[in-house]
Image (tube, rainbow, N blue to C red; front, side):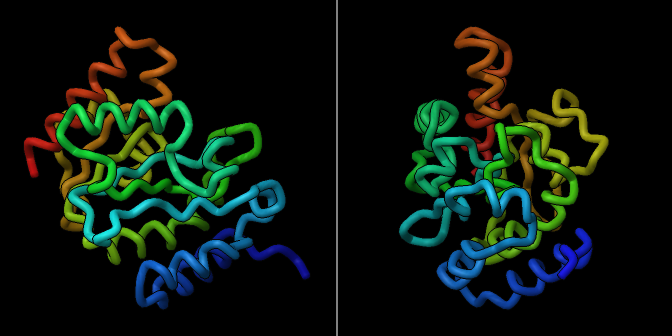
Length: 205
């Protein structure tokens, strides 16, 4: 049987996700997703995402895709980037226990490469349903891939960060990915911008 075209696979994921009545049901079906054959063949876990025990987050943080540590553990943002994110969330008065943490793509791309457009399209149904189930009013998009998912393919991160954008009735804030903050060091501009943006988000809640 031939692999489904990206649009057919994306439509199938969207329909499956939309039919999930709650978070646990969505997580269960997402964990067996094989819409992206290359990712399904190389992953250890589908990283569905973390949500507060109450199920109702103060805000939702959306990154790009799982890395090696996330693939091993099945949880998002638990490597170096996750440690920095946790620290900056705490400093902004937004403890991670009160925040939902998701990615636009739920499986690790081989070698941590950037997700391909068909992969993002196929995985989008999961994220859309997650945002609906969480009742997400405020979203923080971490990094350019996530920013483009919310604001469109021509998005320039430096031009859109620092303020909320109305996307489908949600306030979407765009900022740097923690990996960029690590890459440029503790005194680099991305870390300062990420910290400032998270403080601004906290002030808007």
